[in-house]
Length: 550
Ligand code: NG1
Image 1: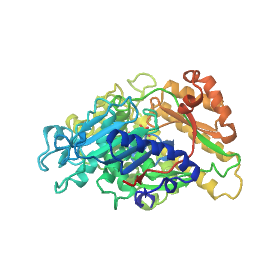
Image 2 (image 1 turned 30 degrees about the vertical axis):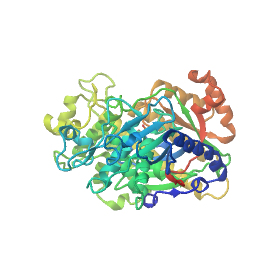
Image 3 (image 1 turned 30 degrees about the horizontal axis):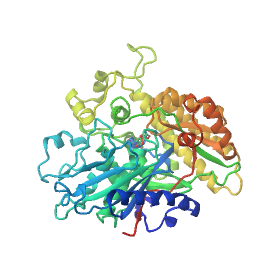
Image 4 (image 1 turned 60 degrees about the horizontal axis):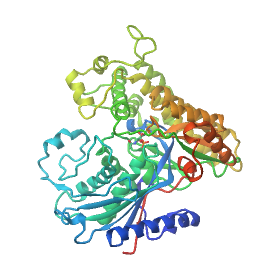
């Protein structure tokens, strides 16, 4: 239901935020973006597109195999002020006036101003580059092209990624011209920290181009999530939909249980925190280890995607499921076939019960210890191909031709075990929150302990089975527990980035002081600098567009 709602378009900020204080606090920031835009471009913006980052409370590295996750939007966000450019502007140079040229600037001086003009290609003949790019090319018949360098992380790539989808969805027939645009971007989501600055960038850029081109009407939140997911693949990461769903669908005071099977759905789940005694909040702490997801994708993120996909195929075969040579089922689909009856997965409660029954089947992926070095649970490329039942050529075509990965051992067993146990933890977390919501009056502190224990178990699994943590984040998580958190886990893609801790509200200050004292990279940080890296966060509202008086 939440996914079927329209994209909110507001004309004033007090309607956009849940309370007057937040609206007032944000007002100054919006005003200064508008002023700066006028100064730089010589005219007023017509819209501000806003998309928040997110903190994933539980459910890591399982969205791309279609299992549900549990994120909340954070207050930190990306704002894009935009408007049609005026004649003579850089966006209109080199055919930009008729081909939707863009002049994009960023308030952060680290990011250089950029101008670009999309290329119009014939709709029927994809170029050689597009053919080679086929796996991540969403519309093979795409008639618009924007150069996005996938080997290097460039800020404007995210702007282009958002634009790509809008161009090819609404301007493919070439009967209407996209509007040339001036835009000014500013953001408060730290990049590479697991709080999803990339999804916030792509969602806000998609929204900005939709708004300027008058294409927002009739677009639902679910459709925007799907567009943003496809758009983000342009930047080179084969992500699931967790971040985009959180950034678009979340509502204040709630997390969402976002599910991807059989289709995208989202259920707002109020967090127990405002009603419980003692009250508790989520605290994000940035390890300051920056993980560049795009650059390291072949040994980290995309490798996890491939390992879980191949694991799913091998498991399906070992469960006796019939698979065509080009089929590439995900673990959620293999689980569904194993169940064999939609009735058994008609509610999250039933899915949880069935997942517990399914868990022992994962042992079918455990390699025999014979001829393997002690403790090694991974398999070589050669073994993986044999296990898949495909020829080398078929295997390459189905699992490797669209992605670049590198490993000596592929961990099919460990990744699948992480996925199924994590999916169960998400459903348990959801149940505890719902129980808390249904309870009248105060809750036993045990509720918070239960949530904390699930977060700790999730961290352990991310660290040991998914291997998406790193020593600094592990240290931060341990320190958080020793400093009184009910639970703590890595959040986001990992290999650096942030932890999220559940902390009693009246302990937040002393908790932060203890982390500062114990985590070496924080020692020199004070005041605003410290608040930049460790902060309590309230679940915020999802993406919206603010329509300004032109
Ligand atoms: P972040 O933390 O935004 O890099 C990534 C993926 C998610 C999800 C998580 C791991 C992108 C854009 N996002 O998140 O879809 O798979 O890792 O749970 O790649």
